[in-house]
Amino acid sequence: MTNLNGALIPIGPGLLVVVAVLAVAAVLVNRWSGPGLATTTAVACLRAVVQLAALAAILALVIGRLWASALFVVVMASVAAWTSAGRVTGRRARPVAFLRCLLPVAAPTLVLVVVLVLIGILPANGLVIIPTAGIMFGGAMNTTSLAGKRAHDELRTRKGEVEAALSLGFLPRDARLEICRPAAITALIPGLDQTRSVGLVTIPGAFVGMVLGGASTTAAAAMQLFVLIALLAVSAVAAVITVEMVARSRFGL
Image 1: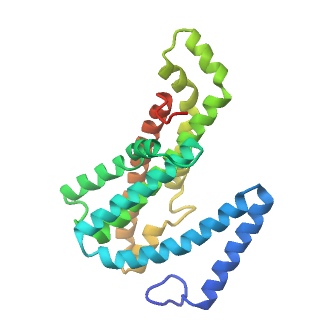
Image 2 (image 1 turned 180 degrees about the vertical axis):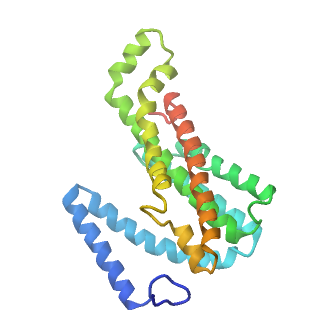
Image 3 (image 1 turned 135 degrees about the vertical axis):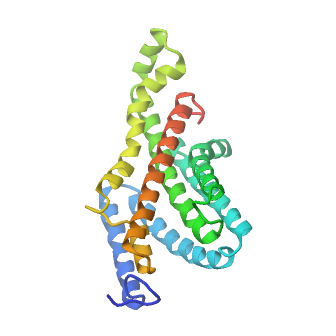
């Protein structure tokens, strides 16, 4: 395994060509799969290039300063909530939806990270806090987006059942919850499957990164276990909050 600066694969022109070919392949396949997917895929690839380049530059500046790292975490939380707000509502995110999405997307992670820092499990430095918070924000964002979208889709599809429940005396929140909760909770399946299959099907990035960084396989396994279990906890809270908010019509749909 040839490497450059500890990289898992060689960094050079060959890698750039492979990345470009894979991006083009994804765009072409998605063009055949459905309308709009090709454009969305192309934009996603371009954004990934720009955002990762910016991330590398920004982290080099903020990672050594705790206040700057905390500010960066706030920016990450805001972007994650804004992304979920657009997915949940099915349209361009609005300020109200964004603020409400901060609760399921950002709150569980922020509480977890602060508690872990206060009790000494996580060191109070950006090198640890930023990637840990980023992983948790990503899990909560995906769960909120999927749970919210599926809950709204189910309510639209089964509107008659909601009305029937209301006619039987159910409160609006309870009637909507009975219909949307089973579908919305399926948003937790990817995280559950990832945890169940870890080490058998997948070797996650945190494990690989620590081993390449010189940590023992035992330490890497312990860190990966923490990440997976924390993701399950954060995602579970995000799903419950999202379903509750949809049932109470907090997203204005």
